[in-house]
Image 1 (tube, one colour):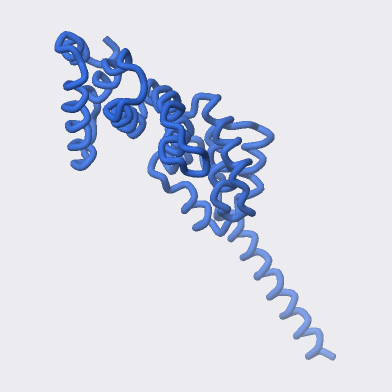
Image 2 (image 1 turned 60 degrees about the vertical axis):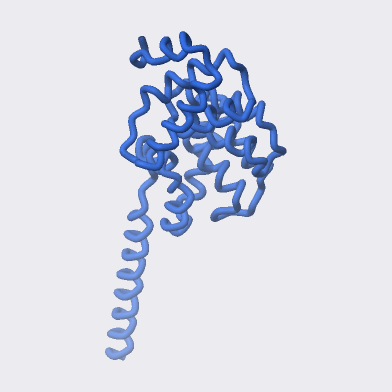
Length: 209
């Protein structure tokens, strides 16, 4: 009898410890702060992070996207839906959430939509539509969008009236990444061939002046 009680107590203690450990494991994954999530998105690490967190935050991410309508979470949720990360794949809903994020002015959302329309990824290729999204992202200072926009201008898409702005943004761009720095230099050189010398001189002004 005493042995049975002892075993029962030991089992209860083990269950308690296991439950406490499981609870601690769940608490270990904290919901991303706005700055943290934006950093993950800008480094294109957001989907990888969700997977590395064992998909524990899916419901929280969904609530912040669908109920609270936070742009960064709308973008994250949209990308998860688009590629089936931790949830069933639903590209149509995914793109819809990316559009919602972009409509609220999320630069990363605008850039990704512009890139998708330029490449024909998940959507029908439409480079003129890509220009619209990439220009909006460029105005918000998104360097990747600024480079892609310049490349589309060089290919003949968009309006010549916007060349000066594109050159101006790239002229003032700051990056420590050598391949990106080289790509910027190439884009500026190609844009110069399409611009009047006076427009080039005007574009070589400090940012926000």
